[in-house]
Image 1 (tube, rainbow, N blue to C red):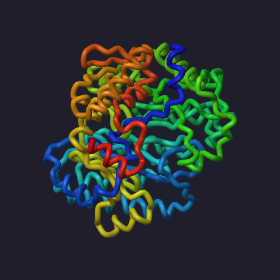
Image 2 (image 1 turned 180 degrees about the horizontal axis):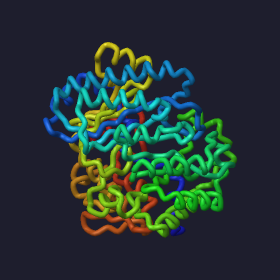
Image 3 (image 1 turned 135 degrees about the vertical axis):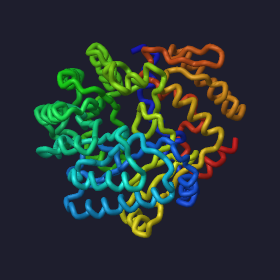
Image 4 (image 1 turned 90 degrees about the vertical axis):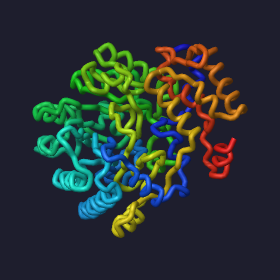
Length: 451
């Protein structure tokens, strides 16, 4: 890595799966706002559906998801009933409008549910919103909970994209994060997927975990390449124990230093590219014939709450506790606690608890940042025009500093990320963001928007 870039290693930049981030959501966006926009969805408008399953069998100490450990399956069945109620409520608000392009089950652990319950949820979606043979069904799977025949039954339901939470193959690292799963377990799951014709298998890997070294992570990458998933997401672990109490269970003295984290990210990039994977965005890799790689090559790559995607839908509908949707310029997030979520769904009401109605300038900023992250370049003329003179000067000053350090090139209104600076994409995106660093106070945020 360029020595001038070392100072950026400890920058904690937003992931920008939304703009502004969910930290800016507030209760001024209501269920009534969400319902109004659902009623304005076009008859054939493409929809991306997200279904959140918050349950896990065991707590992974690194996890930043909205999840809860559950040992009573009856409570999961209660949740499925609430989900199906919410799906029906949203379907009535849509009134037959919208056509689902994709359905993504995330969590938590979606396969905490039995395949029969997952089928019931799909049935509710089919009844309320409609599904076609072309609708892509994706699911995140914990390999420790995959039972005999589960993969075959999921494929029979239509799931053609399956993602495995691998994180790291090293037994010492797995013990340090409380997630023990053998290589043979992952190998068996991949074999089952290939046998039933699943042609889009994805692995999630994490770097920056306790006990990780260059040698151990190299072995993890070698095993990943040997299993030949179609896509690999390589995420940096974010250690936020003040916000995520479960992370306090990790031994902080075993976390690798920032320079080692950068080396691990570089190692993943070198090995995956050498193995024939194509870079997609700043943290995804895909085989050249994978739809994600083709979308990147053809300039169709998008970014939403699932990360980088080839999904062309502008409208996302989230189902489940804490799930986030985006409809007609409104971010709408459901109640986070199960009690609050159940109170809404039992009454046949939308479960929206907070959100954000985008201002025109936020739309412009978000489009520019997403363009940069997806294409490594952006025209910033519209963004600068949307900012106050003070904000525009601050953005330009940050970009000038990045240009001086060789992170970006800047020609007229266009900036471009240097190819070797791809890991710093989020830092460059943050330079374009007038809300960075994050403003948590609601009054301060209102003032910032008024500038």
